[in-house]
Length: 262
Image (cartoon, rainbow, N blue to C red; front, side, top):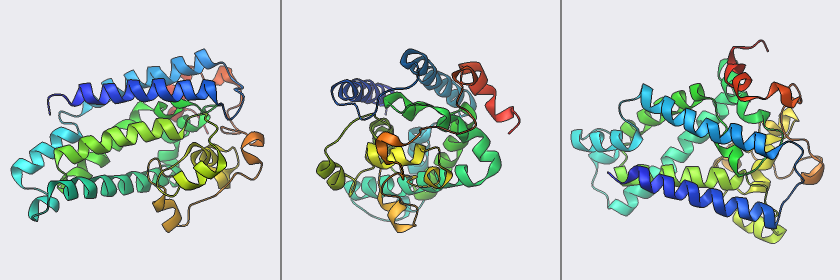
């Protein structure tokens, strides 16, 4: 798929623009930290993470899917299924893998050292969905590459998943006020901003819930779903209690955070 990069960039830029506009038109919460500083950090992480992933891995997930198809590796390459069904199964399976990965990044102390950077954002908006440490991205890519091989995921399915994951991650972190009936209906099929915002609460039992980025079903099936924050969306505090000072949250300090003392 020679156009993979262009497709992903187009969806990234389009989603960023649309969600950012919705945040201006219908914000859920007033911002508490400097938006220019946060946007600089979060969008810088996009560039740093992209370079890190390409330096470490000679093949990215879509390329690995093409190689797996050529070699006949994986479950879906061992059976005869229609292409739409193969793509659907790929999206479902990879989304479940990312859910399980996210749970482990919260429960394993060494992995939490990497992932906690994502939770240090003092506000949530469209850029927060891209705030990940490059070491976490490298581990996530390794897990995804292995999953692609085991599943035997078709290249089109992997590309669809990558686009869906990035799009929904930006949407679910958006500072958007959705009408309550619309939110209730949407979260039957999709992780909504109100659903995911609970995950960014400063209260640990709320931080350790609602792990899904795209599909909400895994949280419900595996008992990690929490409907609302205890303090309500307007009253909840976002972030981590250990990191409330913006001076702690500069780009260099965030990159060094995994190596700092707890």
